[in-house]
Length: 89
Image 1: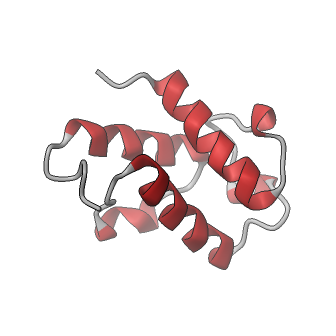
Image 2: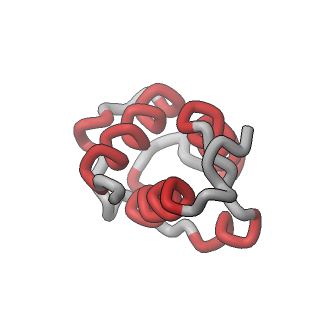
C-alpha cells in the first residue's frame, strides 16, 4: 500500500532540486503558482524527472489533470499500485 507521506517527500525533493526551492515547504496543496519558476516547461521537466527517478511511466491522459502536488503524489501512488505502470522505463 502506498505511503502518501513518503511519496510527498520523494516528489518534494525532486521539485526542490529542479526549481531550487525548499522541499520542506512543499505540501499536498502546493500548486505551480505557489513556486517561482514553475511554468509549463518546468512542469514537463518535473514530470520527466519524476518518471525517471521513481522508475514510473505516467499515462499521458492523466498529465493534464495535475493541479497541485497532491495530484502528482496520487498519480505516483496509482502508478506504483498498477503493475503495467511500474518499471516502465
